Image (cartoon, rainbow, N blue to C red):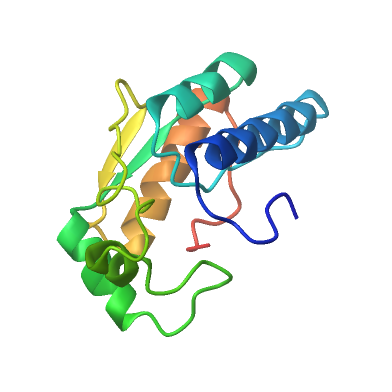
Length: 146
């Protein structure tokens, strides 16, 4: 684990995103398809991924902050993600929550923008599969939600 007790500082985020890109580069060089599932609140982190990974597509899962906060309240399983981050951000006990304590810089030119407040997870997954097929010629066996 890169950060066993994460503080989500700018320096720590830079280290984590650099490590994600490095591992993705190695995997892609060895013909492994990679999806990096990360907030990537800084455009510079995503731009580094675009520069470092030859076959790259950025998908922006756009969602208004109030919808993200509502979904977090309803979420029963976190799948390893920190819990109650928006509550902590709103109360001031965490100053590193993207969109609250630190900025979220929207992508400049993503290959695909999906408004997840209007699309179902299934519809979003199907559109991502279509992008992958169109851009890379890789047919996914299924468009099930991850």
